[in-house]
Length: 209
Image (tube, rainbow, N blue to C red; front, side, top):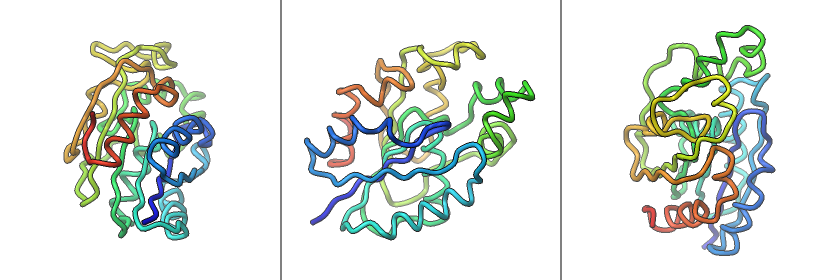
């Protein structure tokens, strides 16, 4: 039985930052990993979701898991709303502001910064949208960070635990299967061995360690 894991990156990135996490999951769990890349500043969510659906269709595997980081988690939410994967698999989302982003709203007050984050982020995190919820058969696990190291500290003051960019409360999506907060930063979670173990555990068993 072939098992694949598709990785979806966040704002201003291209997926290369997943390299260590992908190697760890391949070594420990035997997953075949794939990087899905999309334009985060000039693209649209409709295009990202449509291209992800086409990307998934080309994957030769019986089981297909997904891992999304930061804004990539929002792309996965929209994908599963519109084109849910018909093959079995689980989803892990890392440090994504699924219920809103205080950092994005603060940054968007500046006209130049609003242009820098692009229309897709503005549409999903700055403008008013319907509350998100997870309502599909694929089990969802979410990991949040509590180490306050990141660009968000330059723009936003948080009154709760956060990873430097995203608050823990912003990651708690209704309908999730499991949630875990770990002492890692927003980008640091991608290279942390403990996070890799948690991701692998959830994709294999449907629960964190």
